[in-house]
Amino acid sequence: MNSTPRFHPPTPQRVTIAGPAGSLEAILEEPVLDEPSASSQRFAVVCHPHPQGGGTMDNKVVHTLARTLQELGLSTVRFNYRGVGRSEGTFADGIGETQDAVAVIDWGRRRWPEAELWLVGFSFGSHVALRAGLERETARMITVAPPVQGFDFASFVAPRCPWLVVQGDADELVDCRQVVEWTRTLQPAPEVRILSGVGHFFHGRLHELKEVVRQAVLSG
Image (cartoon, rainbow, N blue to C red; front, side, top):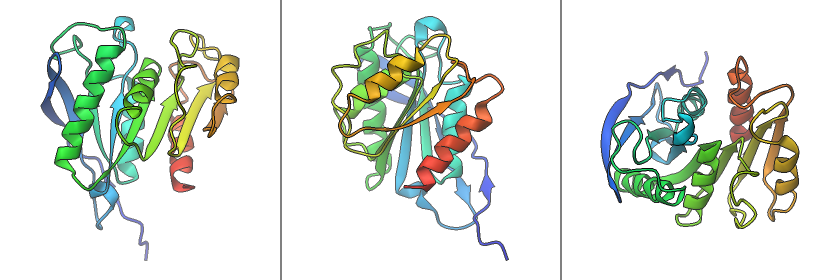
């Protein structure tokens, strides 16, 4: 008899979260498993790409990251930064977007008081997640295609939690070599996974991203 809990895709719940520049539009997804799971013990806040490049919480990489974590038993919150979709406010150079992420984190902590926080970011969202992680205790960090050449990543203090960096070596927007060089300066060093032939938006390769994240989480 198979004892592995069966995954049922959660029904997305659209919620409004109070942010520092006005209300933030968000999607809450809480997995339902056949057996009690870790969903009440862990939740993830997933940060999307640059809004001035069309990034939103509905980005396919962001959605894939959220769904992967849901399948592993986590509740997830995706949200639109200020000025994106129905979120109020205007773009604020990453500083305001970090404040938005912190507001979402605090909302999640009120909803799940005993749960540990995971922070996840894709592209510009990696920058936001890392900045937010400096302000709130984080149990795990996942950053995908961090744009090290466009933002000040050198000033970040490496999080003390388990940290996964995923990068495609054919990324047309983020220099893979610079990402690798940056990670080598960090203590403690993150786990780095380079995906061969993968571009920035993981076209046709989202299944590989999903499996890399899954393996990293399951291996501890």
